Image (cartoon, rainbow, N blue to C red; front, side, top):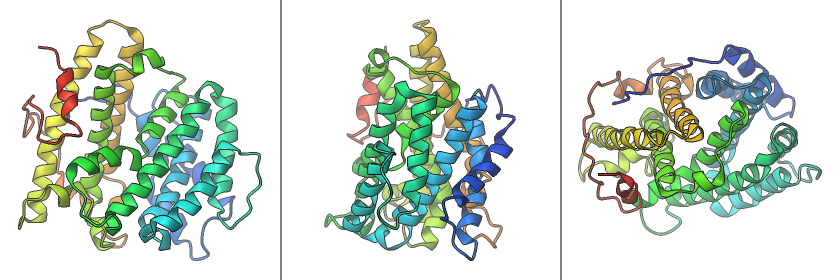
Length: 349
């Protein structure tokens, strides 16, 4: 995979300790099962490393908030989106998700059902109000966007809408399903930054942001493919969606890498274009996005969460063996995917 981004600040010095505290924080809500399997899954996610790479300049309190949210988010995905009965029932998922959303928006409310995870999200909401009150609206709307994307993802995976997913729909949905705006908001909270809305809403910034999010998600689809294959849940993975008719998994992976590299080439151009404005706020914003892209790659390639089987020792990242100095597809023409083609329209001649 092509990634010319060099991590400028390494990993936060408290990353390992923050990750350990996140596991204990989540355990305090009584969420882990008696056999310890869920706890092992969260430990295998290495949330401390993930957030420590993504937000290396974070305050200790901000990094802990981000790590705790990541632990809760992975658990929510594993409990309700990827596994368990609601992972195949969009209607039942919505009922659970709305209870969690209610506690996020109104953390003072008591839990009235068995959804223990809502206690964790309510605790996070109270901490966001204290740490970054100006970002409270983004926190709430980000979770609503995540739930909407998740239920769309479940509907696509289960065939509830009556037709297979296509790549244009998937890329439009996946940014929400992957909670990308929340991850980004938490990086900003942790590092004490916030790009003003009047700059954030511009089409070039929006295109660079969407491209960065999609680079993260394409990498995740690659490294999680074999784990999803074991669960029989690859029908909305980009490897499956991009594979030619009758093609192999390897053919699909090659297509994903080529799309990744094409978007990376675009992102690099857009980031240079935005930095050329000499606005320090935009420069910092782009630097954060770039750090997140590279951090996700460095974390994804070794994290035990994405191994095909916990006892096999065979990393699913075998499809990505290292970095390329040149893109496999460096074209600056838009690909034939209507939901993302507008990004290339933001390039200056």
